[in-house]
Amino acid sequence: MDLKELEDKLKNFYNRCCQQHLKITPQRVEVYKALIASSDHPSAEAVYEKVRQVLPNVSLDTVNRTLNTLNKIGAAFIVEGSGDVKRFDGNLENHQHFKCIKCKKIFDFHCNEFDNIRAPEKLRHKFTVLRVAVYIEGLCQPCFEKENKIKSN
Amino acid sequence: MDLKELEDKLKNFYNRCCQQHLKITPQRVEVYKALIASSDHPSAEAVYEKVRQVLPNVSLDTVNRTLNTLNKIGAAFIVEGSGDVKRFDGNLENHQHFKCIKCKKIFDFHCNEFDNIRAPEKLRHKFTVLRVAVYIEGLCQPCFEKENKIKSN
DNA sequence: AACAAAATAGTATTAATTCCTATATAGTAA
DNA sequence: TTACTATATAGGAATTAATACTATTTTGTT
Ligand SMILES: [Mn+2]
Ligand SMILES: [Mn+2]
Ligand SMILES: [Zn+2]
Ligand SMILES: [Zn+2]
Image (cartoon, rainbow over all chains, first blue to last red; front, side, top):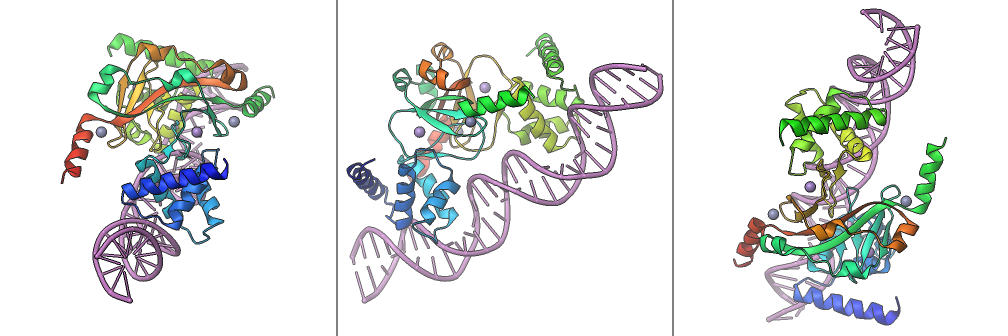
């Protein structure tokens, strides 16, 4: 991500905050910056460690609270998955996730067909749909190899 | 679910256990029965309460362990979602989930188109795909109404 | 500069899940 | 049936994740 893109995103984020009457605090900005700079879908703990390098006194609670706020205002979201700790994503572009159930790494991928998936008519009448995701899980290459090694012992 | 269906599933479950060299214990059977009798995608805690009515001395650890075992051998799975406590599903038929982000209720639905979704070629080469799910979240009717009530105050 | 609402740090608490270990049990083979 | 062994369990401790509490600080606004 180049400087221009970062500035754009930040300006956008400031606007979003103003609209929602959220104050622009150094903590909020640094959490947001740490998140959009990550491509590994970090946990709150991981974001905390990153922000701490800039704001050594930031509290984990603030990071947690802020990440949830980002999710609420649509500046980020919680990655879908089965179990495990919450993982966050600041990349709002259309994309999907593959998660390794062993090492818990989450990989972005993109499949055009999946972008256009909509909730069925029936469902949209009964519920307020806020998000539709295609979620794929399995094993990454290294984990698959390890698994086989163990089995053949 | 009628008696015949239950017996079928149990027999099937016993076979699955034998194949995997898992012992058939009363705890295992009751956890499995409690799960397939539920349609609300219970948490470990909820299954625990149910099993306790039959086996008062069962431990929460055993329920947790057993649910994870069921997931591992493919007799059940962990419902996909963003955050929150683990929820389990013993219904192996093709279906999808809608989750209300407020009350956390999980609703089954079924959309034929979604059954045939496969991981893209590219991904299948790089990873071992074990599961593909379409996950939808939003608000259920009652939660949507409550939300609006609050906003208009 | 003054103010009020909102946000934060630091800590405590709660909730979820896993780990530990002595005991009990299921499946197996005599 | 009985004896044996690997597996599973109960109960409690420990760990981890996430939230709640509260005094203090800060932001956005007069
Ligand atoms: Mn992503
Ligand atoms: Mn289901
Ligand atoms: Zn992996
Ligand atoms: Zn609801």
